[in-house]
Length: 149
Image (cartoon, rainbow, N blue to C red):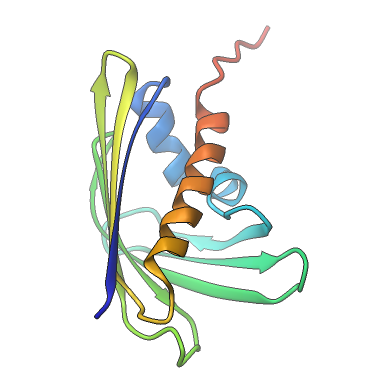
């Protein structure tokens, strides 16, 4: 049976900045790849019905896997829903669904993430661990309040 992970964080950053980290290709390449991987965004058409294509490359083995999906629902600074599907890998079948909610809170932004439909070959614990690593990097990207000038 396909697996599901759920994550919850409060980030000390406004929802607009956290949401931007999910919608800016350069930001995605910086924070989404878990430890030991380098990410590249090949395309991003950020609109409902639009899609994205990305790849992660293992820095040790140099083996790469690509994936992509479609944006199914977008509410600016509040909600993001999209699909994830691995490209051309019969060992990673099916389509995953990701729901991310962004809610302004006293501490900054309450972030809730659900990813379901994780292929059986990927242990849910490893997927959860990867998301935790990614969210550490997201925190480091969005929490600093850097003023220019």
